[in-house]
Image (spheres, rainbow, N blue to C red):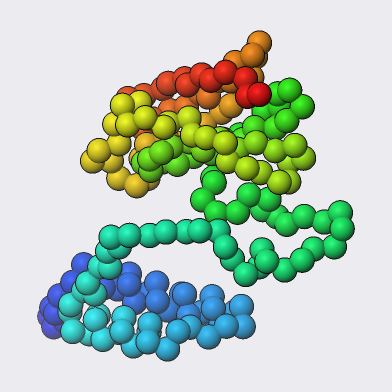
Length: 180
């Protein structure tokens, strides 16, 4: 009977080591070197049997003032994305010669920003569909819950924003009057 190595490793250790190796290979294939501390830290943690402590954020702010957006553009050109920052899942409608856009905000309040544009390139925020605390209760929701992929439409003088509120009430519609 052969003797097998009965040493047990912590669950996930092999997966973490494999993931670090795959990441290093992908970076090398792209012509970039991995960050120097990443590989030794992962190897040290795996060898010692301890997990790295998770990192938590208590505040995050994005202002959209990236240097890439400050350089001048040639006439007739525009940047893509035309609306920088945290504006995922956009929906656009046309009304009265202008365009209106809404975007996901998940569990952030105020929610569902409403933007206005005359040319689909230059946007100005004109409000939020969720602007009163009593409209939806986001208390206790994870950041990836809440409102996803709103849809905006316009009919007969009224804007309609239809949306789903994941884990906070189900489907809903917010209406608003025509902008002057």
